[in-house]
Every structure is written in C-alpha cells, then in structure tokens.
Image 1 (tube, helix red, strand yellow):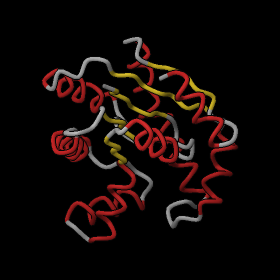
Image 2 (cartoon, rainbow, N blue to C red):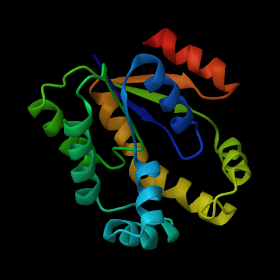
Image 3 (cartoon, one colour):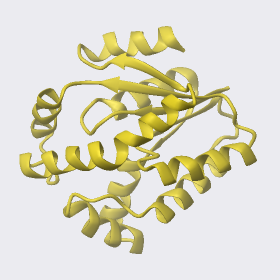
Length: 183
C-alpha cells in the first residue's frame, strides 16, 4: 500500500507526476487544485467561495479542505493500492488534522515526495501555463503564501522523518523515473 503526499510549490510538477504515479501504481489521486477548479466551473457553493479566495491568491480555509479530503479518501480507496495527495496539506493545522485522520484509518506509512525547483523556473513554468490565475503578480503572491504558510508543513514532515527530496528540474519522464526508483 502506497500512502503518498506530493509536495512542493506551485508549478513544480506535482499534478503531472501525481497522475503518472497514480496511473502506474493504481493509486487514488486526489488533486486539490483540480477539485477546486471543477467546483468553480460548476458554480457550487464551495466553488463560489473558493473562486473568491483563489482570485485573491489566498488559500481555501482548512476546515473545508480537510472535510473534502476525508470524504474523498473514504470513498475512493477501495480497489486501489493506496493514494497520492496532490496539493494537500498546505498548513501545519491541515497536516496535524490529517495525521489524526490517517491514524483513525490505520494509514501509518506516509511518505512525502518533495519536488525541488528554484523560484525563477517556477514563475516561468506557471506563466507559460496560461491560466487566468497565472499572471506573474498572482504567481509571486502564491509563492510568497507557499513560503510563509505551506513550506512549514515540509518542516513538520521532515521532523517526522517522512520526507524524500527529489530534484524537480528536468524532463517529465526523467523526474518520474527518479520518483519510481524511490518508491
């Protein structure tokens, strides 16, 4: 059973690598960003609230995201060889709440795959994506939020000995091979 969290700043390639890993290893892939974009497109209550938050370059409140992740894990682990969380947790509060949930679900072998890429490369990648929320100003703001509120989550998991660092620069298949070698 693989119990994975993929971690790193916006634009590091978490989504791309998560999809490849999930497909190859038959894992449930939970993508926070993908879920939120879907909710925004559908105009649900959560989507409307998330849209206002995302447009300001801020993070969706912890209690909403924790509830979403718990529900998704409970509904999607059947017939899978584990899971990979992409874009969650983003705060120490979320990480601590997730640990409680993992313990209740008897998920005890969590690995955090930390993709490392320098900031200028990240900005370049994100601007090229061409999403509405990917202007350089918003990207820089998201990277600052990441450094201020999300990067401490990495330290939380490092203190627990769960982090595996992976160089996220290079071709997609090259990075994917590095990850598979670790797993």
